[in-house]
Length: 488
Image (cartoon, rainbow, N blue to C red; front, side, top):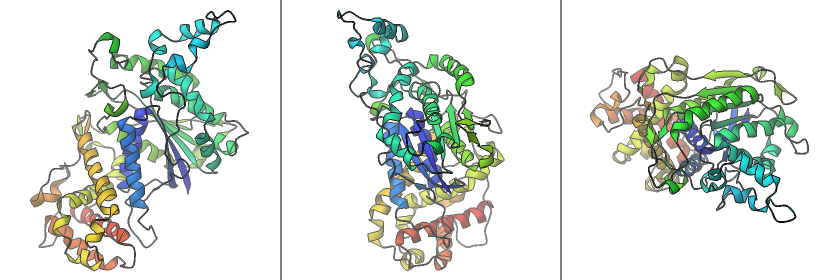
């Protein structure tokens, strides 16, 4: 068992990481992985996409810290540990980017000769960067300008946080890098980070291990558009989705010739897209969850399942690179489970269904069932339901999970495998394209849910912490329901 260091670069990195946390909360398995170490690289500290992801990880950690995982327990919800001890804030901070324009960052005005006149460096900088580049405010990232990002992100390897990551790296650990190719931060950050990892200074502790470590990466191609910015020209956004494809083509040509350090490289994109509001970053950058981001998270799960013999690297050079893409069975604008390949269904179908039933129960039913046998016998009283574990972390995570599903459902291309509206008299018709089986019981809907909770509560030890008992009860009950009603 090993650690997986996941570098999420830019807004796409945070959103894919968010989808991964949702999958792990639902119990999707990370093979051969003891824990993940999130590492976020984004100059836009105020980005709503970033802050939502960090808040979700904190909730996940808060839940998991109260649950005991033992061989006697069946529970797989929140099964994968998240290590935030190596990088407590989960972010590698970029220095000298806040409240500065790019020309100030590179010291353009200081490029003068002995007579005080602009020198050759000044002329060269103006040749490499447009006036708009030089005047660019870096508070919210690089706004589709990888030429800026490639300069600023060079500082990452000189940070204390990066040194801590290298020092904590053990034999058998792996690295995965998430980035987009059509923006600024991800397009510049991925090749730069990969190069630095493979050519890391031998002076750093652990450098030899990390230089030859298995490294996987996903490159996310365009999957959304942004609305044209019709504001005053002087205030117009630098983000123009009409340039996404040309930027992608140019970057792919560069990757083809220069990206040599990855053991496994995943590509994903979509030709159906939704227009988002044109936001350069900050608190207004809050994109709805997208199926592409969830599929990208599945690339991480696939990577950890690859046998070590197929990920050999010698002297910083992989023996070979595995290339993978993602596809669906049927062309449709609204994906359900039946449109996914058998392997993908096998990874997520049962897990998402169990966790959706669990989340709906907490939202729609639990207040009516607190006096039933399963709750009384495990002393799940008012103090438990008022605790931070239940009342903040768990219900907050489950609410975020349902919102995540709703956002993907309404996006283009949509992922909508469930009917998520409350249907108390027809609870088990929630899976689109899958008719529930009949079971031999007088109970139905939430009464049947409570029946299974009462059935299995005798097998759940009462000497465990209440939080452990609660999660164990619901994991076993939803597992039984999914098996009986859907043969999963």
